[in-house]
Image: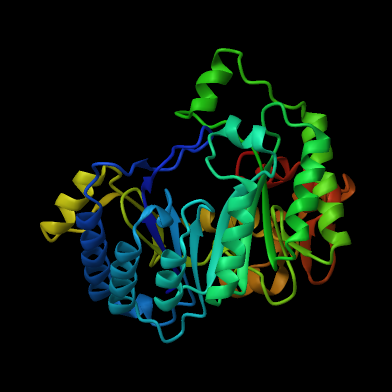
Length: 381
């Protein structure tokens, strides 16, 4: 049974140098047709497995950039969502946004259409770094947009930040954190740069033209991030996410709890009825498939018990609360200790995880090398 719904909007007015998500330039794209196709895909999927949609808690508009749409297109999209997705149990309805695209008209369209949480891609408050990574907004855009969002009625606002950027210094990172926290928002996300294939940064990296911070400096930036957030009263509830009480992102927790969710749109991924699936990515192919009355599935994979066990561990350990014995036994009718006793013992001896009668979780030391810890729970490692 799905707890959440993800809807992919693959349009951008500007392609960021680090982004590897399925996206295209907005201009000359069949945007209105794509929105209609989304409505059809939602209708077909819910009709096929209505029992999977009886307790939807969250909806998340991602991209690409949902706010690349016009106010009228946003209104149409939200009308289709609320028409086809059962909304009675939805408590969190989020949309990603770019600060320089969120006009008052778009904010009102989002708010009136049911969206109650904004996740804004700010990344940095240093203009030279913003230019370097391909962002088009300024600090003034951020300040103005957040104030406008509050005026419209939004209270639950989050911003994304990035560290480990090309040429970024500790001083620039600390200044970004200071400016971000001065906004007194309820939620912040902060991610280290990962140079992904098929991105502008990857091409530069392959040519030896990407001046990345050292691993030690990046680790120091992460340490400063954790300390600064804690000093400002924000709880770290996941490796990269921090929130005041009552503002933890329910949608993101669905992924880390290894629970099911539906994914709609070109290139979207979902996990329903024990099957992980992905949609076709080319936009015109997606539209054609749906309009012909077929679901736009590209791949389907029935998740094995072994895979579910692995996912429970490496996704769950991203949360600072970790994986509890109780939730593990409820899901799998097996003891976590009986399966992973040797691995847990070694990681505990290395001070990478904490272990008690409640469960296991990463230590502060473990958070710095989380991926290495997660790999220890994969079969064959």
